[in-house]
Length: 308
Image (cartoon, rainbow, N blue to C red):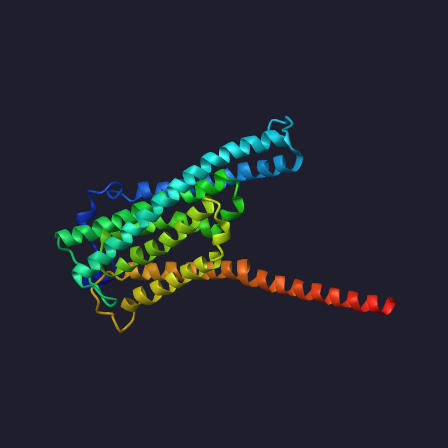
């Protein structure tokens, strides 16, 4: 492949400006952390989930000793209180962390005048570009912090929440973002940390309210899924523009917008399937049950009148 074409798709050399940050010297630490996360999660579930079901079913611990309901409730309550406090602190911290990233990107867009069109790769080592790189790195680092989402699900025994979608999403993010920070920080991919961090402000607000037990105020849960899907649509359109004839000459390595588009399409399909399964089909089923119940009541009244 000619050098000009290869550079249009992928930089030939790493960007030296990001080399000083932790974990950025080599790809392998990030890859190994993500691999350990995936293996650890599925190992935990394989070992702990059957035990949890067994104890719930027959009231015995893993060593065969009988466990009274009061003992289980007392231990569970004490553990849950500690986990709940940690969850509240964690979610509040992630709200502020994500909000900081949103504010930083918006301020940088204000300073640079970047718009929604082509934003080319800028190799200058000036304060503005260094700030872009710092924000990108903090966004990358946030993906390690977000692995705690899974830990809290596992500690609380919420194994149904640890789906393929959840694990794939959390496991894939750190390695994917590493490549962008290492080779082409800044540029048009600013939309990724901006939109994703904004969604996470809303998401961790929801999680924080749930941890505080404010369930009656969480009627908007399904709209959080809709917001996620809107985010993926934004990525497809915004990043996809440099892959079309309209913005083909935009001088930014195209492999990274392409990767974001592929990521967005995959997760749009997965989240759409989740939405259909969790909300649309359940609503249709509930409506059908109501119709059947209504029919049964009507028939009951009619039969009653006949027997009078």
